[in-house]
Amino acid sequence: MLEGRAAGENDVAEARFRALAERQRLHWALGEVEQERADLEALQQLAAALGDPQRQMEALNRQARFLVETLDEYEAGRAEAEKALTLARQHGEPAVEAAALDLLGRIAYATDDYEQAAGHFQAALALWQGCGVVAELPQTRIRLGKAFKMMGKLDETRRQLDAARGEAQA
Image (cartoon, rainbow, N blue to C red; front, side):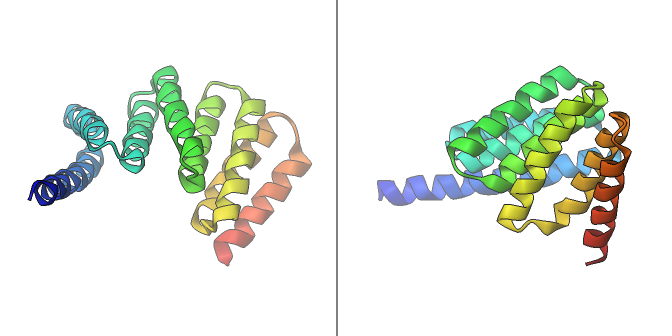
């Protein structure tokens, strides 16, 4: 009976997590920053309570994107993305690792560290390809091309943008 109750409580917590995640997306779409922040904090607490590394990685990546994309808080976003990256590597989650690396590349690009950005984007591309997440390839390649452009590597920029075009049309 106790095991059934624990499983039922876990199901409720999982449903709550999914509901919070959807509500957070809604707050993002509506530009409701404070409500989004509150939901992200609740997601992180719930993920920790669930003890589920998948949910913890998801909550960390969501928090990192919020900090970077909504608040322009790059250092705080970098810290959250690095935590997600560490968890992804520990638990063998290449798609989550790629998402964290892509975000770290975007942070490096936004803070004018184009070499580091390119390195993160290249690593993300290799992981996306390795785990078959082809939908992410064109955007990451475009970002990589832009980083190469900022470094004056125009031939490599063209190669990446041509590859992105081909992937987007496939």
